[in-house]
Image 1: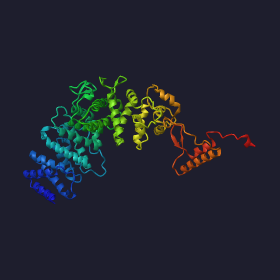
Image 2 (image 1 turned 135 degrees about the vertical axis):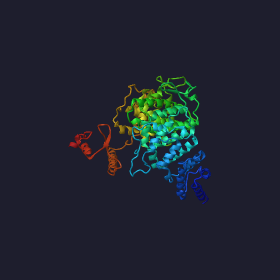
Image 3 (image 1 turned 90 degrees about the vertical axis):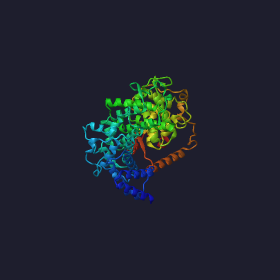
Image 4 (image 1 turned 180 degrees about the vertical axis):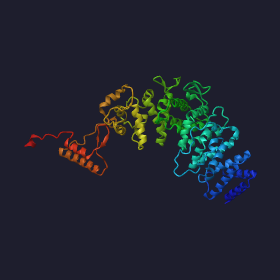
Length: 586
């Protein structure tokens, strides 16, 4: 009850219109509510009224301390997703954008879309084509609001609104906030802005691109987002470029990656936000053809990502998170651009294979193994790195041969099943029967590509039983090779494998002990009885749709056996009926 009276008292002080009284009341409220993230529904109307009063103050002339107090209150109030009504109008968000220093002059005169028509599709109400970039440059002039604490509080409020309210997202897109924040992001070298401003600029950009498809496309295309954010990443990590697509750090040129100092917490925090935004705006690059300019930007970005992959952050957990975002983004780049992972010269301490620097590929393999061993949320954690290794192997021969030497070395163990053991191959084969179809398919695809999509080689390393799922999906049950383009080098066989090859059970992939014949000692009548019994069991299961009779079609795929097929089999059996004996003829 005391809390409710305090809120009423604050509202009364605000209604007087006096700045000093309002400042004291808001400072008291902000101090008490600083760590509050849950709100009472009983006070909803009071909080909305307080929000309206604070916005009224912000639209007038205020002393800096009162500006900050008002915006801190807005930041607290916008945490309540049920109390955002005062803040999602066009005028309210324009006010917050002005205090954040990202308002765009031309957007202020546009019609108010804060109350969209029923059924309005996402992406409507965006900027018109041909709009001049001059207006956007008004957005980030420090002279408009030099108090960086005020800017940060306004950015935090806008982030809260975007996170909680769809109407607020529409208004933000209409106000062209992405143009305003992009102008400030261009000031990445010798930036006048502190860490918090830079971070919340990026956080706001991330939310806009994650929640609005139209904004995502606008940043990627109209605002040249890949280049813009690549430069931002370059400046954040303090990189230099000894060669066109080779990165280093000033003063550490030629130093092996493992000897480089870790990035600071501030650097890593900003870099991860940039990586997330870049992931949003490059999400479709692997699905469409990119032009020469965009391909060059992606290769430049790939070189930066290679440096990220080979660097450490502040602490092991932070490094793993940093590498996770890097791998996610690498998976979005066009496949031909992944050659930048192999471009650096081989140096002392580098992993060399076929004359190529394999440090980055080896790091990716180690990252994938770590996620594989952890076994937690494999679809979210393992698949990005596994897919990346698969596609890299498919397009780059050196990468495939290196990974095959690590994952599928010449086969010596022919006594244990492929899924038994602690080697990477064993772990991946176990995944080929995983309950999650995506995980199962991805693991099988990786091994299949390492086998150059050769069915016989794939079965050799995994066993026919484990391989059957992928072979059925590809129509390769009858053998052969898929349509991939690979070199014709022969598969090397160890002496152990050659000796045991004839005794290996292709289903399990191992040499098995000879099993006793279950029909040994049975009469012909008993064998016939057991065969009919088995046939009746299959028939019963088929009739109740537990199983379906299948056959291998001409294209190598399995298809259901129809009644017509059964009739053909009866009239044209695979094996001709036995000729009656001379005794039976009598």
